[in-house]
Image (tube, rainbow, N blue to C red; front, side, top):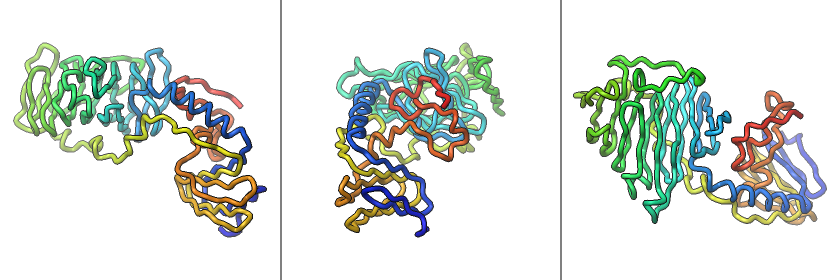
Length: 345
């Protein structure tokens, strides 16, 4: 590992099993930072949620029928329909800090999502579970304006009171759409809509379920049955509760802070370790997730408080991508990863 080094005019980079970005900047990085800041701040207000964890595969279809694949960090907007693949799940965090875990073979739509701590009139959350299952924890909107939150299905509408709950929608509850190609789920107790309140209470189509209660409704006209037990598929659910995932919510919808980007060498580490050594012999050790800087004269080496915007939103592919000739250049630009545009290089 000590035999591999990358030299620049201002510093030498030592590498140990590493993936990293290195960029020598003049005035171009400062200009790029300013452009990205304006673009990000203009688009961020339209982002209502982010997929913070994706396992297996998650597809979003916008209200303009633009389809895109989402990875962790992917932005979500009003009107998006989310589809999970078989043997997959995703955890979504919304602007009001509410969370949802989408199970495999699930179709879920964000009809409305607006939140203001001060104004009930400017707050609303309306979701549709079209088929499949989810686990939900309500956030600030559910605490401050609970009447403005609704989870709809074709069988019943769910209201909340500062709640954690699970839903499973199949059979007559599921909305059939051949284009979505989501397999049907058959439940041992019969198909329909099942609900399970595991924290506080929910309004299950007019039937209040208290903590550790479950209910079933076969179709829209059937009576709601409060079950004397918790269905086994709820107990055996391997998809984690959304509140079990540790993430810094404050950074998900924040605007880019104004960053100076003076000329020099910038290094950001994705994997492994890097040693940044300037001309005077000063060294900075960087590990995954960290960034460092050396000025143009090679006299100063230091850690940076965060990833520079021009590296965080770098559109150029890593050299280990499966097909670098075809890459979505918009996938890392803030607010425009729903464009669906692909550039052939």
